[in-house]
Structure formats: structure tokens, C-alpha cells
Image 1 (cartoon, rainbow, N blue to C red):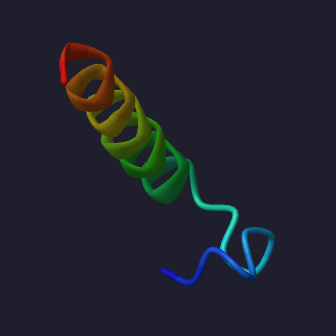
Image 2: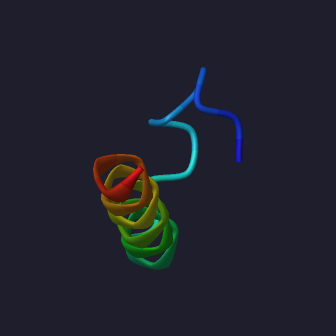
Length: 32
């Protein structure tokens, strides 16, 4: 998954995983 090409594979699963990972990172940074 290359963030430089977000429209290359607009799969619902990929978008969902990306959203979960992003939310997890933001939550971790917020806690830190």
C-alpha cells in the first residue's frame, strides 16, 4: 500500500484497514 497512490486500489477493505491503522496511530500519538 503506497500512500503516494491512494486512488490506485480504491478497495473498501484497503480503505477500512487504512482507516483503522490511521485511527490507531492517532490514538497512540494522542496518548503519548
